[in-house]
Length: 150
Image (tube, rainbow, N blue to C red; front, side, top):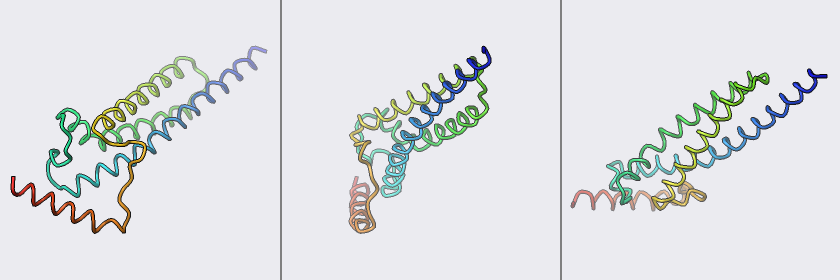
């Protein structure tokens, strides 16, 4: 009977871990839009961080590092998924995994807060549509002209 109880606990743990993977995955999907937006801005200005018009330098640095951090978090999530697949109910293994998930989630939330403080609407970031591309390139030309005159 004890064996059945252990099996039930393992299923419950794996269910919890699956739920955490879903949460992390949906957050990463949201941050992928932030990353794409970030890359698009960097490409359109093709210049230093000042052009993004973020006032606080530490926030500007955080924003510039966002794509790299997101790649790291995605790699971490992949490793966590691989670990999750190996979990067989060892409590210590599960505890470590849960702590790693919590840490990854906290990093994602901290990044979202910094991007939000920088004036980005993290929930609704989107890249310009093809129709708006000409407008975007005019804007970047204007910005380059302003940079040149500085």
